[in-house]
Every structure is written in structure tokens, then in C-alpha cells.
Image (cartoon, rainbow, N blue to C red; front, side):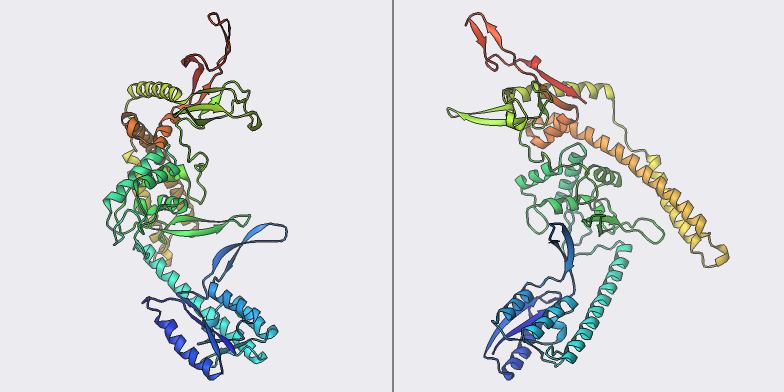
Length: 513
């Protein structure tokens, strides 16, 4: 009889496969005694039979939804082999190695009942070939599931305690800090500060990530940055020194999103982490206001995030009625590469005939925007800095929240602050705190935008395309490219075709914000 041996352990802490190896010794001996002629091993080391992962399903009407299931690839492969008859029985060390989830157990019972496959445990605790054995297995798996749930609950409570103490946790160091998770890594921290400043000035996160790819800025584990981890890193309140946890929530349609949530003490005050912050709270608030706090950015940075031409998305056709966007086009003619802005073809909603030299348009718009920037910089004076009085008030609010909590939890009942008064006063303080933080983030955003614009203006030749675009979009809503009207050429005695004349700056119209 061909027998499958299933070996599993949830946590191989020593990373030596010692647990599954010991299970293998016991199960092989049992299988040989029971008459196994051939043995196939299905090993899942470091694999939980309790933890569930989210997967996407679809109903017959095509509606997609999420379910949470225990994922064990080798387990599923073994079940398939049992269904096809490749193996006729299974040996495990104990029933809790087989399953800790009722769905998995019922799959095994189905095979035992309808396919006549045998399931045996070395300790004698598993027998799915009798009604009593199946009933006992269901009870034991339910108890094992409860045991795992209790362990998970205690682990969550431990992490809650660590979070409220501001202690950093995690298997890997966060980007911007050293291995102790407390001391700043100055090179990575500077990358974060520059990225935040550029985003506040209008550069897209996609542009920052592409710049990091080109310069070889890697994750702490040595990988290139991907979109979701990159945004998650920027959204993490850890950047400004606050302890946070990842929270998963489902919307009305069932769509699940993850977002960071600042950990708060029982009195409602925010927990400050035991590490050095990289940016200020004001900057982080301004950053979140710009990119949003959930999975999808508040501004759709994926649209046009990879635009490689300076004015892509800004240039619009002045010939078409609805002024559609024009696209950047390059062509190779006689060994020379030419670039131009051109209206889309008629099938795409454009005219297809309005076109202009890209370098000449770019240079003209650059000079026009430079002039506007210099004029506004000279006339506008210094940009406002966040008010220190607001900062002091925020500190006062945190102290007042702590005092309210202390009064509400006074040891002597007669001295306690009534709950009605506590929650009313607390709500007013929290509202004032949120309004102050929002106001300071606006000022911080304006300051960062002005600083970045000044830096790009000075270092235009070395700035990235995304930085240049952010600089121009600070001042321009669009660039209207008017059509070149046909004219009569007296010398040639005919109408000159559009595009054959010298570049006319008057036909390029900037639309200011």
C-alpha cells in the first residue's frame, strides 16, 4: 500500500527542521509496521494550520469577494493525490499536525468516507474510518483551534503592551533606522526627508520611487521598492516618532484595506515610540494630507506617474473644441531623433494635425515659469513658518487629556469626574487637536513646496523630470498649443502648409493657476 506521510510544524524557530525530522522518524516506523510498501513525504515546515490568509473568490454571477482560509499547498497536493489514488492512506504524528481548522478536517473526513482512504496517527489519537473516530476528531480539532486562538489572544495582548510602551518590534529593521530599530540610519533617513519634501512640493510618489530605482536605493532586505511597501513606509507614523499598528478594515462592498493607526494610551494620548524621529509631526500630517492614509492615494498618482516628457498631460490642443491633451511623440528621421507634442488622432478624439517641436515648447515654458517664479519670490516675501504657539497648545492638550483621564479614574468614587463631563470635554480637546494639526500641515505643505521650488529652480539641469513637472505644475494649469494657420507665401506663390514656418511663441499660451 502506498502511504502519504504528512509532516508539519508551525514555527521552526531554530531553522533546522528538527521538529519535522522527529515526526518523520515516528511516522515512518508506524507506516512500515502497518504494511506500507512505498512512502511519499509531504512536508510543510514553518507552516501554520490555524492562521488564515485573504484570498479572492467569485460567485457564478462573477461578483468577486474575499474569504479567509488556511493556506497549506503541500496539504492540498496530498489531498489531490489521495483523490486520484496515488496514495491510499495517510500517517501523521498526531491529529493536531493534521488539522487545526474544521474545514481542513472535513476535507480529510470526506476522503475517508467517500474515497475509503485511511488516516492514522502515531499516538493513536486519529481514526477517521469510524463514526466515533470522526466525532472524536471533530472535538479534538475544535479544542486545538481554541488553544491556537487563546495563544493568538495572549500574543496580541503582549504586542498591545509593547505598543503602549512605545517599544519597537518586528523581525526586520524599518527603512531609515539601524538594526536596533531605534538609531537613525543617516543615509536612508536623508532619502526619506528628501522624498517627503518633494512629495509635499508636488512630485508624485511614483516619480520618487523611480528615482530610487535608478540610484539603487533598496529596501532593508536588499530588494527594489514596490508600490505598496513604498507607500506603506511613507504613511507609517513611525517617521515622526509615533508608535503605530496596521489595521485592516472592510468597506460596505466588502473591499478590505489596510492602514496605519497611531497607538493611543487608555487616556487617549498618542504613544511616542522609543526611537529617533526622522521628520516632524507637522511634515507627516502634511504628507498624509497629500497621499492619503489608506491603500489608494488621495490623489491618483498612478495616472501619469510614468510620464517621461516634461509637459505630458499639461499640453492641450488649441485647435480641437474640447482641448484634449496632446501626447509626446518621438521619431527617427535619417539617423536623428526628433521629439514633438502632437494631438491624438481622430479615432482617439483629437484632430491629429496640430503638432509642435517639443524642445522649443519645453524651453519656452521653462523660461516663462522661471520668470513667474522669480517675480512671485521677490514680491511674496518669506513663507510663513508653523506657529510655535500652536505647538505649545498641542502639548497642553496632551497634558489636559491625561489629567481628564486621571480625574475620571480617581480611586475615590466621590472624587471622580462624571463620565458625561469626561467624554464631552475629551471630545472638545480632540477636535481642537485635530484642527490644529490640520492647520499646521497646510503651513508645512506650503513651506515645503516653496523650498522645493527654489531648489529645483537653482538646480534645474540636475533635477529629475518628476521634480521639474512638479515645479511647473505649481504655476501652470495647462499649456495651450494653438494651431498654425495656413498662409499665402508670396515668394512661392502658394499656401504654406502648417508646421513649415518658424516657431511662433505667440501660439503657445500658458494657462496660469
